[in-house]
Image (cartoon, rainbow, N blue to C red):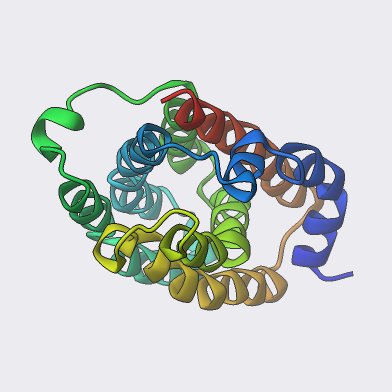
Length: 218
């Protein structure tokens, strides 16, 4: 079995338990997702995304020489992710908030867990970041376009300028998710690395689900 298929299958129940009936998605579908919750989602996502390039750059410096190809690949991912946090700022401004004031509060539990996990893994086992990427890119591929369209529909009535982050990632993340799976399946991974990638994916699922709950609380 390919590495990506193994990790996805081994964590399938974790993923379903976390997201299939997540209250944030339920609120979106029911038409009860509030402006404050949407703004909170953008805030928590900003906190997470603005650390992504730094996390990847730190990981690059800790990649073993035996995995030079991963070093180059991760550098490309860092470049791709650079400045995506500015899309959150664009949406927050379009929603009538002052970003410098609105974003001054620190990240809450879920985003904090994702950020600190990222820096730790970057230094101690950088290839295990594939478990993080497989999860975040997969979530974007599955949900971003769907909910950008819903928020722009008459149910919510948000302007296109207010959903730029979701709309952009609905496109970016489909390709990124496929790229991560392709890279994983070409990687010479022993059992220890395979299990580390799986562990990081499971923690990422847990922290990301918490980040969405944090957003729903406003």
